[in-house]
Length: 239
Length: 108
Image 1 (spheres, rainbow over the protein chains, first blue to last red):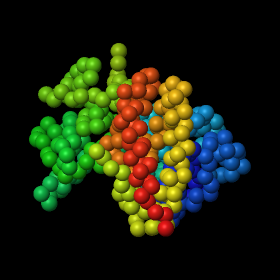
Image 2 (image 1 turned 135 degrees about the horizontal axis):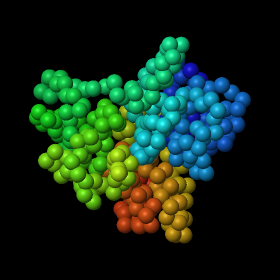
Image 3 (image 1 turned 45 degrees about the vertical axis):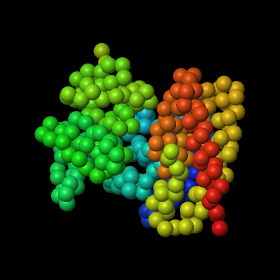
Image 4 (image 1 turned 120 degrees about the vertical axis):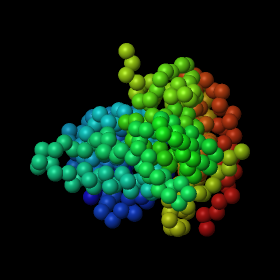
């Protein structure tokens, strides 16, 4: 699969190129530090996949995609979680990687890319998007005292960081798991969960009410950090 | 006080020391320019542009496994977009720590 990397930050390009080296089927044809160079290249070359930074000077990743008549598959790379919803609007966007990108998360994205490529278009099925793939996942397993315990996503209403542990609160009971919010966030479907503070992830379908800087979810009052508030407000079905 | 480390770089490299050296060299080369742009924009009170610089710099925080500092950068970026600079000193002290840390790294 031929791919290019578009990112104005050299460190980011170096990391993505290294990650691509770990996947035998990926062939990095070229790297670009700005969108205009990449557009010129794409006018003359067929590419299967683009790793695209959203936040670039003069031309955002979304502006870039809008210039392409037949965009190839795109994996967004960004330091900003706030564009996830906008990303769902584009069928060509297969996944959304938050920097700094880890190898396990990159490999998960590559599995999605492979699945999209193998999708039976002849049957008239729609191209799977990030949202539809996530929607198929209904539960996760956590390791507690050497047992793998199944927890259904829709029963989780709150996850709280507690030092080296996380506390997962569900309708039935609470689980203390040796992990981090960052790790569990990668497993959770974006359609249900949102990090609203450095120590809290909520199931935003379970919100009871919201005050200025806090959310009432079941019986827990959870703080909202200023940086996460805009994303929360975007997700709400406001009258 | 959170200290920079090579944890993320080591995890990413999977033992490929050539890659580790390459990435460290890139971070060392790229950071001064990004910091200079940030300082220039702050001196000119161009806070929205400074927010863009902070956005780029925070990736370096992540590369050097500064998870708490990464959150500080997110909050500071948001502040700058609203014309506030409350977290500026904390952010700049993190930059100093990163500079000091990078000086201790040999590329041999």
